[in-house]
Length: 237
Ligand SMILES: C[S@@+](CC[C@H](N)C(=O)[O-])C[C@H]1O[C@@H](n2cnc3c(N)ncnc32)[C@H](O)[C@@H]1O
Image (cartoon, rainbow, N blue to C red):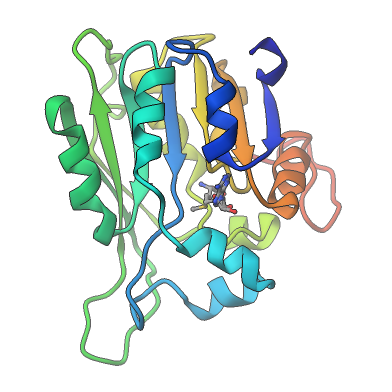
């Protein structure tokens, strides 16, 4: 287990998670491959352009096998799980978390892609938070907020190239609320490494797992302060 701490591991999480001992993780913070219906929002131009290979696109849009939720429960000391998902996955995940204290957290994007046809703007992203009795939440007015408003992070997308990158500040805020210093936070779908960078910034330990070699490299570069143009910056977050 020690060998995985503060590492980005290239693996298929469905297999990898079996090597994690029972009750060894404090929090799971993850952003699962979204599930979309045909013609639904998600396979945006940016998404298709950024995920250049068909396999990459599949990996971010095929949904998940929900059996991994039982593995999440097994490896956690107490259920303390954040899952970003598409609206089609919300019901299944919230149903699974029915026995826990469950909240819906949202990120409101202030600059969603304009839509020309008969649909709402895609300006909300959803994160289900599930907590077992006994997991403490830290104090702080801002930390307690269930919503967060910001522009979709085009500059992060440009710097780290991941089509579904989440705002670092928001991830830090969530983790500051629901974890303690030095806790172990695992992300089994870590993408460009936002969860790992947040942990590094706020003094939590992390385990990041990603199936695509390209994103493993991006995440490691990002942790080392290198953007995808090869530029080093001490201030890169
Ligand atoms: C929604 S993205 C995560 C984005 C991340 N939150 C960020 O800010 O960059 C989900 C990631 O899960 C990865 N993935 C898909 N299936 C996987 C699997 N079986 N095991 C590990 N990673 C997987 C995809 O390659 C993708 O990068």
